[in-house]
Image 1 (cartoon, rainbow, N blue to C red):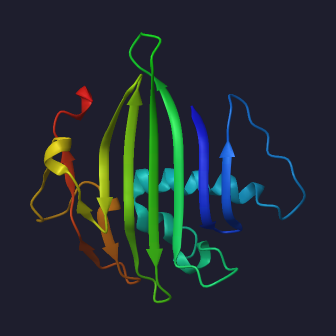
Image 2 (image 1 turned 135 degrees about the horizontal axis):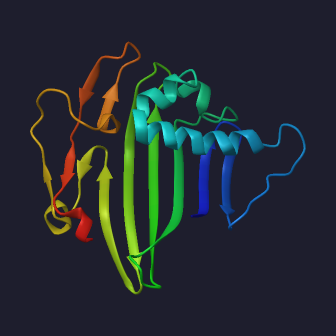
Image 3 (image 1 turned 180 degrees about the vertical axis):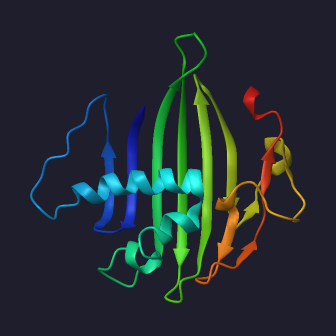
Length: 179
């Protein structure tokens, strides 16, 4: 269940930090950001399933998605969600953050992506990428894959507006199910 949603510079959402519960109702006047909040969750879903570039393409590109109230070039989204840990009463609490930068020419790149998990009193960082590069990879049990052919996860790339891709780096978990 999603417990918290943090959004910066996404459509009309300049800086939102929202605590969520089991049931949530979005109530507010017209043009207050209710639909944009729901679209932010759709954006994340599209990004995970089809890739970052598809999520932006579906919305007209980075310049149509970034908050237009200033000279912003960065969109940040964070989620905190919890999932049951096996059949015990302990919960796994995941904290996911992504920061995306874009330019007026349509180039986009993941500036930072981080995923941590906390079970009881133990917290582990599963992913910590900055500008497409790994941090503490050996400590996290991850290994770089060779850059050849089509990589299985399109989120790890830098794309031009014409759709020609330049893969930065792709990391594959080794035994991540035990984390």
